[in-house]
Length: 148
Image (cartoon, rainbow, N blue to C red; front, side, top):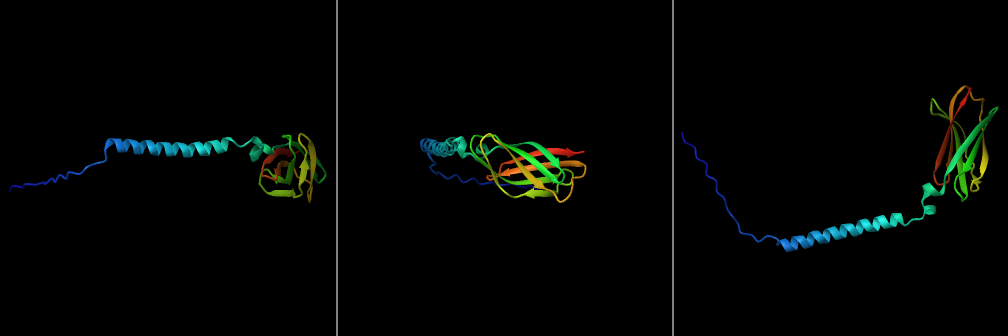
């Protein structure tokens, strides 16, 4: 038995895009892309540091002291402008549960240290705890301390 396979090729003569037009299109696409990127980068870089929230509010917990069932947290403002310190939390370091919170907000002047008190329902047993302070714009500062 003889098998023969016949393959027919049909050639169509079609005019393609000339290399000059293709080059011009590639140049236009690259220019448009670079303009979009330039616009985005220049708007991001042109913001002053005071407009960037992560630079305009920075606080640090300097120390924590415990007197009975009251935890005193000392918060320092690290920038020159005033910062509103919002909620303060005391968190159990091993379980992650929030033991107490102070939802009041206090303004801290630039460079100053304030004392924020949190009253607990009971004395803190031995263990590791986390004091967390948040600002009005969402910046957080944490401090790990141990009760022995």
